[in-house]
Image 1: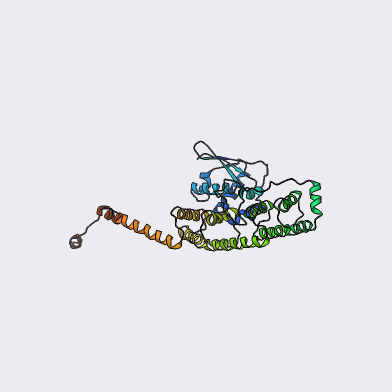
Image 2: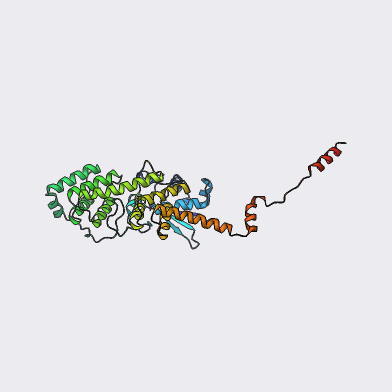
Length: 361
């Protein structure tokens, strides 16, 4: 396979790993995928700046498909952009800025998830295109007028304390948009900050997506937000337990899968966790895409309950057994003897004894 050229926009001579990658991406990724990404970073800073799928596969004792799968994963996470030649082979890899990629994942249509057209979205799921007020740019006079309100002063003060840093002008614009444009109370905004930070999301870009979801869902009070959060948290925890995920939070793409299963496909917790359990039994590792295929298949077959799923399993096995029984006897015999399809030797023990005795005289 031809060499693949790597491109970068800076001239760093060291292999630098962004903290954002470690904090937000590494813990959620397959360990082998992490190795490939780190090796890419190292290759980027080598003198010849070249990379080959085949050589990398040999180096890590993987198949070329394993390497390509890792590259596509990081492309999906928007840390890489892959270029293909006319033969659909990877010919270029671009590193993207990880500081913005997580937020871009929430709105980029390369993420194979869609916001459900339903009433109450999950708090951590990406926002859909909704009829909400456009985000204005507040002037200095506007901001001065807002700051004259005691509740706004307190809201901005609490935001700084929660974020652990002074607010930037962009931060202040966002907070005022939630307060003024989305008509959120200061209490609801403070709860929004608490909720997102407790979930490991400190980016105001991310929080704004949550705010838009809440607005679209008609959430206007802290009590409503808590009810929605509790419902989501219960389902999220059940999914994480069924998939054996511990010691980390879900990334936005994973959270959006849960929303899709519940809101778009219309499955309850029992069916979702059953699909998660089947995923682990089948491939022995958490994989949201695999679980998604199970649930999408149930949706197509109109399987809505555990009893219906088990009935479908029995019918499938019965059909499989009937198909095997309907095969011609010769085919069944050939299949049964597939491990003995070599010439069999026969021995006459008595004759061998006679020959052995004669050979000793």
